[in-house]
Image (cartoon, rainbow, N blue to C red; front, side, top):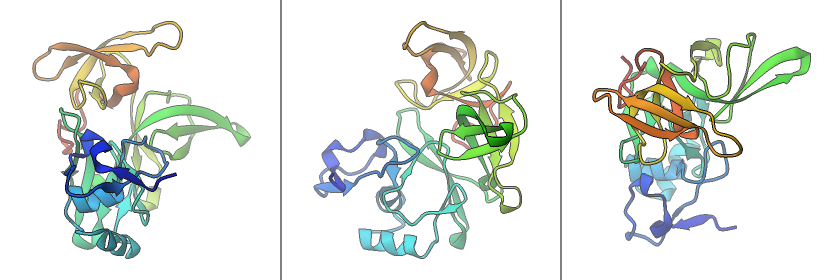
Amino acid sequence: MSNHLKRLNSPGSWRIAKKTNTFVTKTAPGPHNASAMPMAVWLRDHMGIALTMSEVKRVLKSRAVLVNGAVCTDPKMGIGVFDIIALPSVDKYFRILRAKRGDIVSVPISAEAAQSRLCKIADKTIVKGGKIQLNLRYGANIIVDTQDYKPKDSVVVSMNPENKFEVTDHFAFKEGNTAMVIGGRHSGKIGKITQIDVLPGSIPNRVILAEDGTGEAFETIENYVFMIGREESVISEWGIEQ
C-alpha cells in the first residue's frame, strides 16, 4: 500500500497547492475517514509551522503537539472536525472546523476552551458489569452511569487531566435543538432542527433545519448533522466559545 497520495488527488477541503510537488502525505487509518487532514499537512501546508517533512518530524518528536489531550508523534495521523490541537509550548490552541465551502479551518481558541471537546456519539454498548459505554465519533470510548445518552447525540467531554473524559454537557439529537452540518453541500451551516424524517431500509434519514440568521430551510442527511447546542449554539459559526 502506498504511503503517499498524489497532490492532484488530495481532498479539496485541504486547500493545499496541487502543483508544487507530485506527492503529499497520506492519512493513516484512524477515527476519521480518508479525507481527514494528516498532521504533517496541518503543520506544514495549513499552518506553516514547519517547512519540510524533516521539520514536521522534529516538531512531533519533541512531543510539542497534543491532539484531544494526547501527544501526537505520527505525521500521518488524521485530524477532523471538532478535534482540539494544542501547542502548549507557544500557548496556541485550535479547534478544527469546516467552513461553508467545506474547507478545513483551524480556529484559534483559548487555553480554557481547549480543556473540553464536543463529541458526537457514534454508538452505545453495555460492557462488563452492566456499565454503559459511549463510543465517540473520534475514536474514544467513555463509561457513563445513565441511559440518557443516545447515538447521534453530542456530549461535551473534559480533557483536563484532573477529570479527563467526564461528561460536562449533553445535546440531544432532536427537533428544536441546534446543529452544525459537517458534510455535503451545506457543510459549515448552523441551524435549528425542524424535522427529522425516518426513512425505511438503508436510506439515510433526512433532517430539515432552519438556518441561523436567515431562517431559510435546508435539508441534509443525519450522518452530516453534529449537535452543538439546545436553543442556541454553544459555539459561534467559526468555533469561538460564547
